[in-house]
Length: 223
Image (tube, rainbow, N blue to C red; front, side, top):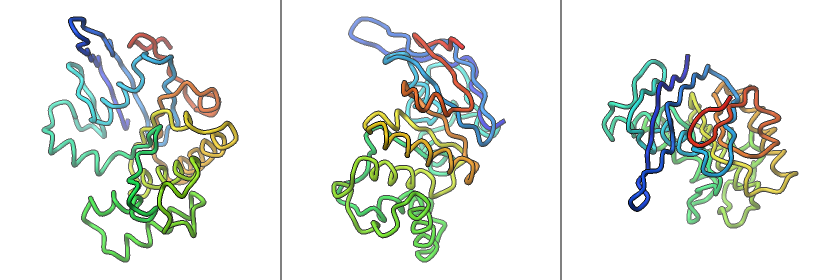
């Protein structure tokens, strides 16, 4: 078992009102899954991804990654876990505009501080070739199309070979043809790299290609 989520709860304070974002969420993921969490806006799917990826903290429950319990870890310990275990793909790409494609993708490897310069170069160029961006390594994000920027984001997420990739609405800002190309690319990399992909989405295309579909509404898993 790669991931276990047990009785996870999260409440946000909105003015004087408490909003229950997650209510007793239970979820298991095996290695190399391609799973989508689907639900309407405000259903809690992004909050769930953020809690699993330790970007946000739940108020109660348990999260186990590779049998390591995450809820009791310190900020520094969680930062280290994120660097080693997770890759993140965002709806808005979250690329650093002043950096080149190569520099954006190499960043996770530099943060790990365990590869030489030549090893980093080989890994980055190899991953850019895999996502169809060979020859564009010196471009900056604003010189690329939306689909190309999302490919950079995917390369950045996968270059360190994470065990889990968390993708929050990765096709939301793309046209349908580009979205289909991106989903096909992620599916291919899932099979080649063996990383588990967990999506939050309301895109029918991702739901169709997911090997497992989890439906969430009002902070609770429906099915």
